[in-house]
Amino acid sequence: QVQLVESGGGLVQPGGSLRLSCAASGSILSINAMGWYRQAPGAQRELVATITHGGTTNYADSVKGRFTISRDNAKNTVYLQMNSLKPGDTAVYSCNAALFTTTLTLMNYWGKGTLVTVSS
Image 1 (cartoon, helix red, strand yellow):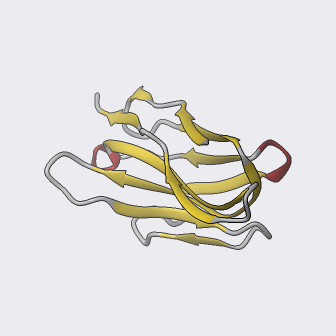
Image 2: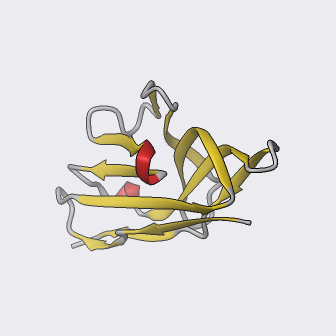
């Protein structure tokens, strides 16, 4: 069994910063890509950023230059540093991991999400 647990969400004023973390645990052999997605009220889930095991990153145009994704492979953890936050960034942020379990099965897992609210 594998679990992804996010942390770091909360209420922040426009222009502020937050750092999200997502730790994967359980029967993990290795993790390929990890990523952050978000879903605002009444909207579909959208990609925020992804990072490969080797560190190659990809960002949504709406967050380029403001958000930075990183990972610690030794800790099976992915981070999202969010700066210059805007009210439009308000959403539930969920992490995703494509990984090989200890039974050599490639699986895709999601965390339950953490709420980020940007408001004055």
